[in-house]
Length: 148
Image (cartoon, rainbow, N blue to C red; front, side, top):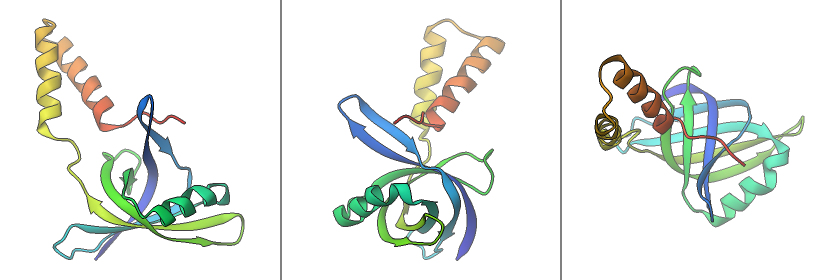
């Protein structure tokens, strides 16, 4: 097993306007790669107790959630996981511990990059303009926008 610091976490939700990612402010957190050959990961997040109802509801539903997490440093590329809430524990100081169990998914398929590049070439971009536009759009794919 390998343990890392969890520095940010977003949870996907879908409504009539499409998919959105809600940033969950963390007090602290850990990510554990179980190294079991099955790509299993555990996440423990310490969050404000104001989120208790939401996480208890997810625990009861037992459905997998799409999580976008940043591990170790804020500058690292976010990773996607499909995970379920396994436990919610109320702690002191208005905090809860939320334990997730899940699997890492493909972070960013090459298809996204190819699609972006094709669109930019079709727009007639080249050289430095192409490079800047490609980098900008690729980062937008990589980091989902947080909304509530």
